[in-house]
Length: 188
Image (cartoon, rainbow, N blue to C red; front, top):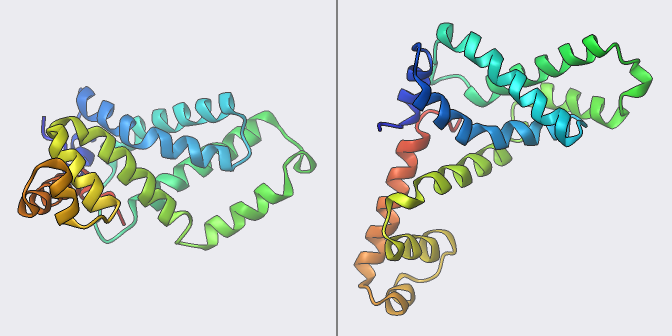
């Protein structure tokens, strides 16, 4: 299955692309849940909001035009916040019932393009790594993990795994190349 993210977004626009939706949900549901929790929602409400966002995306993505010059993260976050606001209106909550810290955080979020950019990137990379891990032999993955992520010297990792230093560098390169392909167009 071709799961590059630039093509993933395009495939989401097509009717009947269940595999693309499954991959999208795998990549983004954790991030959406985290954002929902930051709005002050309890776990069950956060999960409901994420489902609401995914339903909205099913409706919006067929007409979505991906622009690599714009932030997919910001667009996705805007949809989540707008759905949350709709929830607040439907529930007819009084402003005094909303945590002032949540409202202050929303103001910062909307005024700052860097809203959780690092966290977005970290969560998406982490989830992407989880999804591609099974595509590699355990030794290749271990070499990548120890050298590429932990920053341990290639010679030491090679010695411990019974590989050459070149094989450790190659493992890092292969895993990172596959990760870039998986997340192409989604990291802004």
